[in-house]
Image (tube, helix red, strand yellow):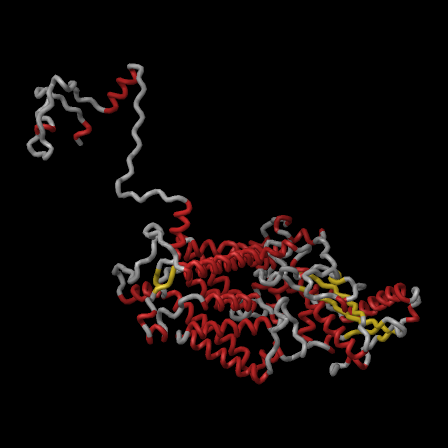
Length: 619
C-alpha cells in the first residue's frame, strides 16, 4: 500500500514518513533533505503521461519474478524420467480385484460351454476331423487325446475358480493363459476376434497384481500385498482397450460398410426377435446401426479416457454391447467389454460406491492418496521396473502396428484375407461361395475327377475353408499328400471358387487353372487369388450421399429389407444354377487340360463326374 504513494522529506506535506513511524520495526533516522530529492504525491498513470508529453518513452514493466519456492523448469529428458517414475507410483488396486473376479467368472462360463452337453462344443471344434487347419508358425500345436481333453477342461475350470478367489493367483493365471492359448492355436477354423482378445488379456493379467485386494492370497499373507498397484497397470489396460475399439471403427470405413452392408441383409434375418423384430426390417435401421457403430468404435476410447465425457462413454458402451448381445448373440464378447469399461472409473470406485450408500452427504476421503505427476520425484527405476515398462511399451506398440499390416499386401483384406486376423476387423464381411474341386492325374491315364472336400475334412471345416484362400491352400496340400500315398503319384488339384462379398455379384476368388497341389500354404503370398473387381456403379446409389433426400424415413416410409433378402436368396441360392455351373466349369477345365497335355483332344482325358472309390471317407 505504501508503494502507491511517494514520500517527501518535508513534514509539512504529510504527517509522518515511514522512516519515523514508531510502529514499524524498520524505523531508522530520517534521510537528510540535502542528500535526497523532494518528491510529490503522483499516481503512476500521471508519471507515465508526463514522460510521454516530454518526449520520453514509458519504461517497460519488469517481468514478474518467480516465487522462491517455485519448482525448477525441467528439461525434456527429466520430464520423460519423471513420467516413467509416475507410472510406478502406487494407487488403489480395487479396480484390479473387481476385474479379476468378473473376468474369472466369464472365463468359467466359456470353459463350461465346451464341457456341457457331453463336451459337444469341444468335440465339434477339435475332433470332428483328423485334419485341423493351422496358424502360421504354430503348426506344431496339435490336439490332445479326447479323454485327456476332458481332464484339461476341468483343470481350466479349477484355474478359473482360483483366479476368481485370488488363490495362488500368479500360478493360476499363468497356467490358464497357456491353456487358453492351446485352445486358440490348435485349430484355425475356430478363429474368433474375441478369442484372440481373451488370449491377449489372459497373458496381460499374468503381469498385474490382481490379487492384492479381496483375495485369498492377501488374506493369508497381508504383509506381502500392500493393497496398491503401480499406475502403469491401469494405463496399460485402458490404452489397450481403446486401441481395440479404435481399430474396429477404422476397419468399418470401407466401401461396403458405408452402404450398410452386410447389416442390411443380416438384420432382417432376426425379424422374429421379440419387441424389435419389426424394427430390424427397416432399411433406415441398417444405415443407422452401420454409421453409429462406426462412430462409436472410433470415438468411445476417447470418451472413456476423457473425464468430462466418461459417463457418455459408459452409457453408449452399455447400449452398444447389450444391443449386440440381444441381436447377434456373439458369445462372451459383450459382457467382457462391459466389465472392461470399469477400468476407466476411479481406481477406488468400489469404496466410493460403498461410501455413497453408507455415508450419504459426507465427503469421501480416499484411503490411499492418488498419484500425481506434479508431486512425483525423479528417481532411478529398478531393473524390474525397467523390464516391465519395456514389456508394456512393446506390447502397446505391437497392438498399434499389427492391425496396419494389411496395407503391406495387395488387394482387399476382406477378399483375400491377408492381414484380416489379429486386426479387430469384426462383423465386416459376409461371403457366400460356390466351390468345386477336381483332381487330375497326368501321365498315361489323364484322369480328371471331382474331388469332394468332405472326404478329407468335416463339412463345417469345408464351409469355413471356402471363403479363406489360405485355408484352401492347406486343404489342397493335405489332400494331395493323402492321394499321393494312395495313388503313388501326386495329382494336380484345381478349384472353381467364386464368392459374393457383402452381397455383391459372384466374382472368382481363385484362378481355376492354377494347380493348388503344390502351393506352399505358409509362403505369405497367394498368387492363385484373383483380385476383387472395383465396386460396380449400380451399388454407388446405396451410399447416403447419393440418396434422393426426401426425408421419407422420418415419416415411416421405408424399404422392407426382409423382401430385399428374399429376392436375393431367390436370385443366388438356386440349386439348379449350381448344377449347371458345375458342368460348365468342368468342361472348361477339361478343355484347358486337353490343350495343355493332349493337343486339344478332350476325348483322350478320362472324365469321372462322380468321385472314385479311393475318395471315400475312409481314405
